[in-house]
Image 1 (cartoon, rainbow, N blue to C red):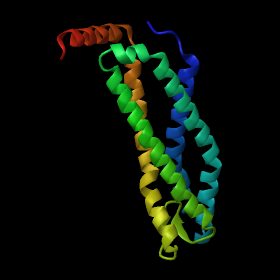
Image 2 (cartoon, one colour):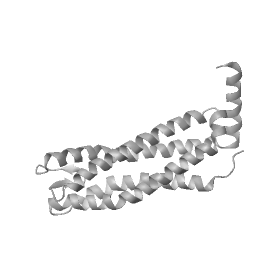
Image 3 (cartoon, rainbow, N blue to C red):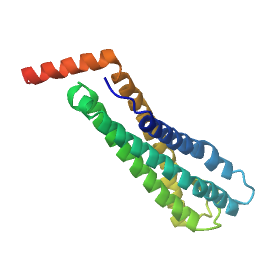
Image 4 (spheres, one colour):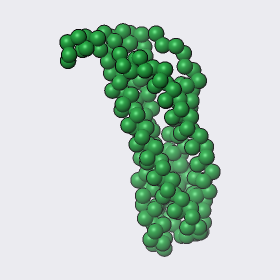
Length: 188
């Protein structure tokens, strides 16, 4: 049986929850809310101020999640090696984490372009209007897709994490270890 890893699990789960929830709120709430500001030149400033305030919190959340995930992987390395399905779910989770990190970093780069442009007219936080300068408009078009890719990838991570929680149940561990042992003996 596994030892308790409450701190690692907490870092993993709270970090991922903040990463997912903050990005979803930004896409649904913040970017849209900026669009109701009367002056189109102030809309980008409002959205950028919100995202710039969120960035250090998001970075801490991501760091907590990655630290917790790495620690849990180390703590469960025996199960990863010896329980059928755990290695595969861990590989999927690692790939999804890399994807979510890449999408988040790319989003920050595009968001910084919008923020650095200053007071330019836009439709909303992630949507240009006809007066938006072309470089800012392109960054906003990128952000329009990425604002949904981050909660999608982190949401899938939440689902894979739930699967891994199920894999830690005693009956799942026994069945998975037996399957892995049979597979090693038969070479299948």
